[in-house]
Amino acid sequence: MDMKEIIARVPDYTCFMTVDELDQSTQKLASDYPDRVQVRCVGHSRAGHPIQLIQIGHGSKNALVFACPHPNEPIGSLTVDFLTRELASNEALEKELDYTWYFIKCIDIDGSRMNEGWFKGPFGITNYMHHYFRPAFRDQVEWTFPVEYKKLSFNSPIPETKVLMDLIDTLRPEFMFSLHNLGFGGAYWYITKNLPELYPKFYDIVKQMGIPRKLGEAEAPYAVTFAPAVFQMMKARDSYDYNERFTGKDPVAGHNYGTSSDEYANRDGKDRTLTFVCELPYFYSDKIDDTSLTDRDRSDVILESCDMKEKLDGQTRDIFRRVEDLLSCDDNYFRRALEEKLGGSESIEAQRAWAKSPECAGKATQAQMFDNLYVMRYFRCTNLCLLLRGIDFELGRAAERGFTAEQMQRLHDAFDATNALLDSECAYLEENMH
Image (cartoon, rainbow, N blue to C red; front, side, top):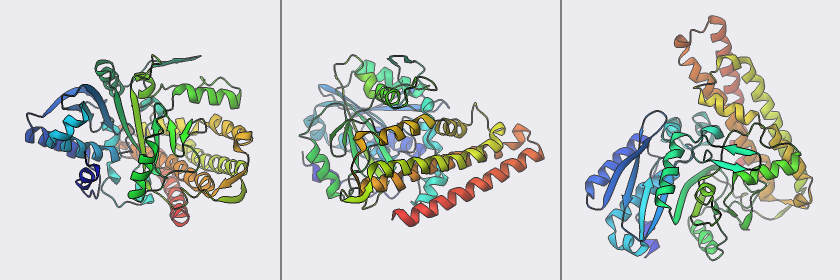
């Protein structure tokens, strides 16, 4: 297998594919290779769109690959679109890998449609932010798998998650690839168990592509590090234990979501399925992998980040409260996501306690400081995106809801205030993040 030769065949994509374009591409693939590709519907999204499963090969092991587990993460849909055609057209490669492959190009179809406003560009922070959507944990495919741990009990998987549960239980895949990516940062990886012989290859691939590794703060303080930028797959129990340790409170309070596909697949504790995740950034900076030391204490930088998040959350919350009664709790998924994120004060409380622990002693690296002061600000701004789109969603159906003139004015005023704050934050980020 000549990986360089295969990679050279990857198209020079200039934008992302919409859900409809992915469906059309799947139909053409099946038409072009009727003897090698099987496509079948394995369920429907919450809005009723068919979820297509593509099967290729007849190997001795099963591999389950799914893209868009989070709908603002479409890089994987292009990966799957290319890989399905490569395997269908390259019988020698398919036989060498010895897998029966099962692909889903987009598992969160409804959420992906809500992101399509930025899929064709222009690709900058401001345009991305104005069209961004990421659901609340209880509405996410990747985090509504059933789990039982200590006082935590969740068994309300959404329909898309049920599709994956059925496939995992039926196929019992030896390999599972959940294709993720992130808004701003560097490349990093998750894997079920420690396989250090792979990590130099990970590093080589992104180095060849000019993508920095994420060498600042881990995505979550409780992530177990196998190597720089390589972590053990996270589970619901990890978050539970971390919050219990650093807040002294019952982590079940307000916890209304489940666990990941990896924990579900390996719930018997035997790690039968090797799950792999590669996180790739849309935007990155040369600060992301700069491990030189600054003159600032890491704990102080983390605490400053907490202050920033509390301030921005407070500004967002103030506007939200002006129109909270006008944003539907039932079908306004922007509101559902925003409420959850604004209600997470315990996470900042836990982070403050963690910052003062011995784990955060010493000087911060450039990457850690950039992560805390700028990347965290970037991600916190997504709350403003959710608020803006939540208000816009209700304005779009104002007649249906029968809003009064006073209510309409409140919505317009809140929209303008949110838009101004978001644009101000985006300008600051674009000026300082380079």
